[in-house]
Image 1: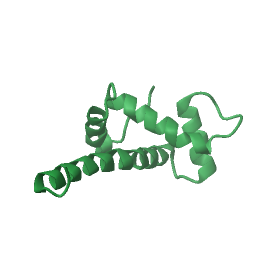
Image 2: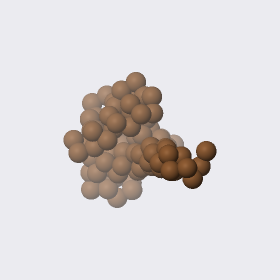
Image 3: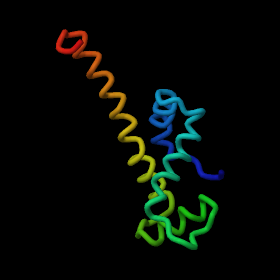
Image 4: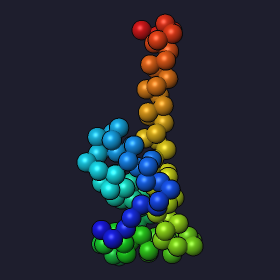
Length: 100
């Protein structure tokens, strides 16, 4: 795949990939793109991921394919990162004796 994650999101991708058991940050990146694109795809969209991103970006009014990629990755990372926060909160509450 010729796509690369936006530079400012690479650290977040690496952390989320490690925490959630993905083979690599690249595998997580591709998964987030495919999941994010799924609701916007239409019959006749090209099979290659690069081409599908370009088609969806044009159809949805994004300024560029890169803008769509950044949006999909950020949108996909939010629940993964909040899941980590939930675990930390539970550990703190357990340590304080509020939960067992």
